[in-house]
Image (cartoon, rainbow, N blue to C red; front, side, top):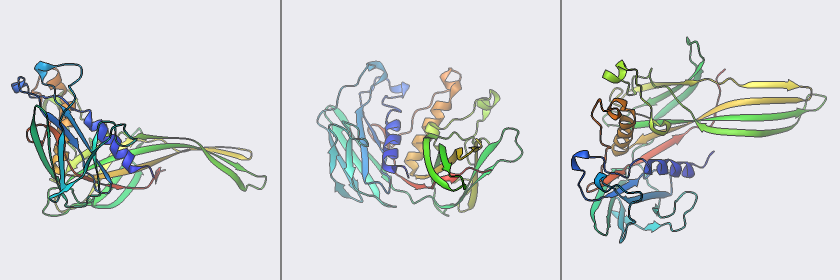
Length: 333
């Protein structure tokens, strides 16, 4: 199993780069504000807190000024936690980043306040969601298409009476294997020569739970992409029901080549990471997707949208999540 802690840290760092600037063009002369990115996740023992300074449009410069006099209060269920700062950086905590050590659980209420010299204070709140209500995962070759597609069928039971938000991220592993046999056909040696692991692109157009292109975007055949291949949805259409989500990706067949006393193979396997997201995290990711896919807006033909924030007095997001991870699943034949 890959290091989940390292993976989440990398995901968060990608999110941190998403927006450090104020995007509200109706208020371009606003003063600078604090920008917060923090994603407490159940099951991890370290929560990163990225704090920076916004750069208003009218004060655009290469690098924002460093923060001075920073004070952060991070509380779980009303109990204040020790906030540390990484000076030199580690593989999972970048230099200059603040962090909290501790494990959180379903229903934990997270509150964060922060202040810095010459900037207004900020505050934000989130709650750790429940685990992904997974029932079954099945992979199959999608029938009835000219180009072969692998279909991921994710069956989950949505709880009744709650508003839940979900996400799925798929990893694809290509593994090149070499096996040696003696004259009797007995395996005497086996090694993996190379293995590559990459995010796997999925097509969501056939899935009713996913946002699809509408209006002018549909007319001009402008279709949605999902930020960092994290496919998100909410439970408005499946409230309290058991549902099978179907997502497709391009199929790569396994290959086997045999010679006397030797067999080489290329095998394809998949791992799913299934997320439950707090409403704040879902809205932030959805606003990233909406902004990135607003091609008409970037061309000046539609309004531009602001990124969602739940940080009072500043920008960014404090959002909770939980992850269920499958093992490596065999390629369908």
